[in-house]
Length: 612
Figure 1 (cartoon, one colour):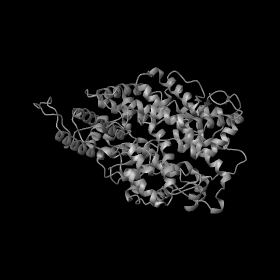
Figure 2: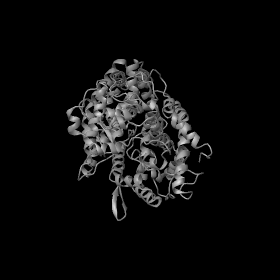
Figure 3: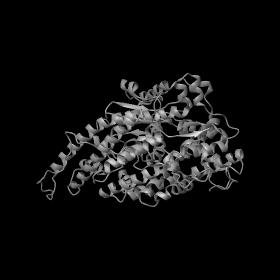
Figure 4: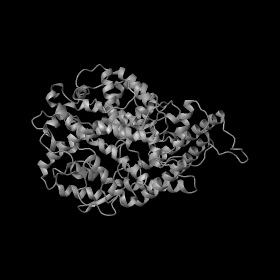
């Protein structure tokens, strides 16, 4: 997950706002005839002043956000609320000022910058007095409620991290249901705040000319918002057959373990028994569903621990991968300022994220890293954000973000697809004699599918839910029922117990109270495989796609960097074409990557009744 502080990019996790600096873009002075058509020169000056103001604010605000994320206290919460309100006011003011130039014929580059300003924040406050302050306070409160959430279990208060460990490791359905429901006692207090926040940002979006906040979000994809919704559905349609086969197989295997009372074969799967607090990835129950009579794959967690890795070494090895592609080493400040492990004695937001605090070289990651295979992959993912941020650091502030938000999430994940057994040999984690043969491919692919394929419908439905909240399809009293309606429709999952009337289960997922758009993760899961295939083709790799690693291929690194350096300066199809040679996002690379697994699943499921 990337943290960015560019108002114009419309990708911020936060709503920005603020006091006016010396470079503030002022409204017309008294006596100015604003009925006169603005000129091209005025538009140019407006954009220059806006860029200066955003740059000053971003550098100042980012330090405050970092301080709060790495040390949650009443003081850091208050400081964040103040700077968030400041940014929301600035975003609203700049967005509304940019509308003045709607009818001015601008060069393409200036029009692109102006449109990004109009989109402003994903969470715009209306212009009326007090709205930005109220929005900032609500957003800070939501984020902190999640970040400090605990519940009682077996006589002691436990955190999300501790609860997640139980979900990952326990195979007791009663215990799993209790832990699952316990974490969801943290979120009901959020619902009223969330509903009020929706009212505020919808009003702000409407002032900018959008039907609601969902329409504002969809406008950031270089195409009509309705066309983008259809594009997302098209991509899901490409990969849905693979997910359906995986779901059918996993349900049958879990039925063998738990029986019909826990896992009926004609119903959605209980969300608590899949090894993840949100049922979004299923890798932690891989051992329960591993293909029979196949060679074992590589246990990366065991390799890391046997080799004496700690969190710092995991990050060093992640940096080494990017260096092998020709990228410059990370700056000394990265190692001095990053939060790589959870600090003792203070509350922090453990959710992994990558930051660039000065939009130049002050890149950092924030993780509560554990020595395991999952975090080894996450390290590569977060560093991907940092290298992308460095690549576009010389772009104007309006373009210092990904070509679309899915690009940013896909970059690191593409690198992680190159963590093959052969790569583990190259970095000294695995002996060459222990590299599994092709008979272990099925194990590898199943393990990956349990995370990456299982995630696809969740990645799609989170923002489907928010869009329906924003457009009023789901009223506050229907928030929870709507959440489970979509989870069943897309994922084929259900809650393990009846939900109470005050439940707000969406709030138990960080990205809802943390106000992070989620479609980027669905797109990233499509794009990472598309990028991987293009890179492997570029490298001349001729074997199965899942066995390709681009480690140490500087030609790929050069092409990769050229795409990343573009930032958002061009429509995303231009950036996609620069690296892959095509202008369309395409899910077919996922199907190619998992083709051997699809064949296996279809054979295993041939006598089963699939669906829910």
